[in-house]
Amino acid sequence: GNVTINGAGTNIGGFVGQNLGLITDSYSIGNVTTTAASSNIGGFIGFNNAATIKRAYSSGVVSAVGAGGVVNLQSSGIG
Image (cartoon, rainbow, N blue to C red; front, top):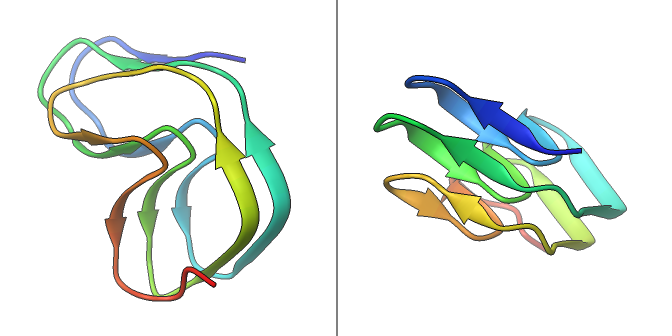
């Protein structure tokens, strides 16, 4: 489904807001929208925090100030 934040937010994603572990064989097809400046907004993951992503994608539209297509903030671990 779609994710809409009316106002500002942090760590918002179409699949998960913050990833601390392992995500494999997953996808997100919903749109992600915020109506105010927000941080760590991604189509799939808002903040990938030293975690791993394998064989994943996002096909939704991201409409936000400072947003990323798949992952907005990456600390390490995309495999």
